[in-house]
Length: 144
Image (tube, rainbow, N blue to C red; front, side, top):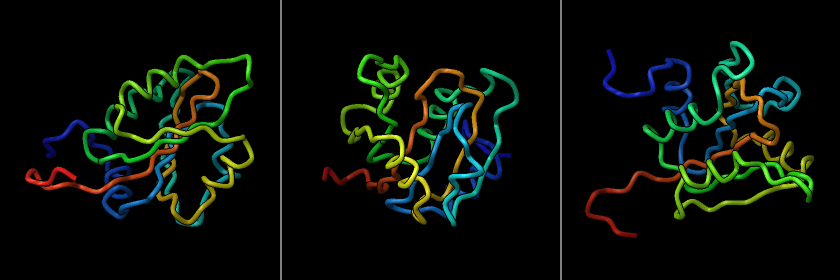
């Protein structure tokens, strides 16, 4: 039995095998996961039904076990500001570098060998894909 909020065995195994600069994709329900898989990426399907499991819940669970140093989203059209991006930024905090990329560049970044885990969610909000870059675990005495 585990004493952590994240208990999914395949997700935990993929995270344990990841390291600094590894990438983890939290994919929305519209993302074509099979066609954009990186060569080292484990795929976990949590998309049980529309809205289940949502991307924010997945992010919350991931943040309990891995440090995140950067996050990238797919750039939406100029006339659309996805509310979920603000939610992500709030949960990640100001210390996490934030960027948005054009769709095809985003797909290329995900297909990188650095992507070690892709989690398919049932998230229905548009432009909710979130690519996380794993940071380092700092000792309590370290301030840098």
